[in-house]
Length: 185
Image 1 (cartoon, helix red, strand yellow):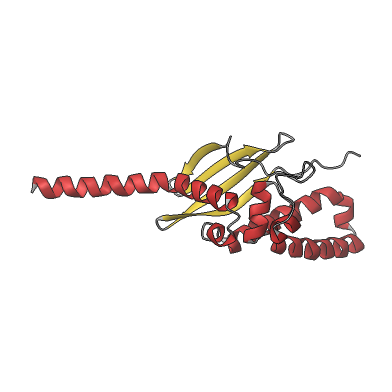
Image 2: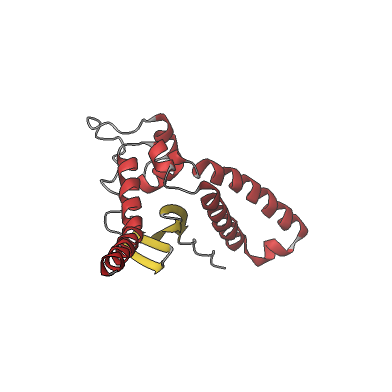
């Protein structure tokens, strides 16, 4: 009986260890996929429908803040906001792809990421990617099924990468960027 209890306890500890190590394994896999420029490997670690939804909400919020309350209250302003949101939605759909996420995390332009251009070690003027986009990240469990990695941009603004546990796997579901400051009046 004691052997079965010990075996069950060992299995439970192994499961808890796997769940605790899961986000770090996922972050490492994302790093490796970005380094190898492997969009297929990156897509295995990203929940694109949730990511698109989150990015779209952030873009719509940023547009509303930028336009201000006066623009939002007028009928023509509402129409302009709706058209801007549609255009921004297309942009979000283009960015929320394996190539787009790799470009954001790697710091490369989306066009260079898709075409594979822009990085030539012999060209002093070509864009060089950062060695590891999540190198100086601060990691934190927000709950047993939510994990964040916070990195600073070149300008010092925080970018929060959010992973959610889906079963035993962890997936990137959100990239929270600091909203731009509202224009001064």
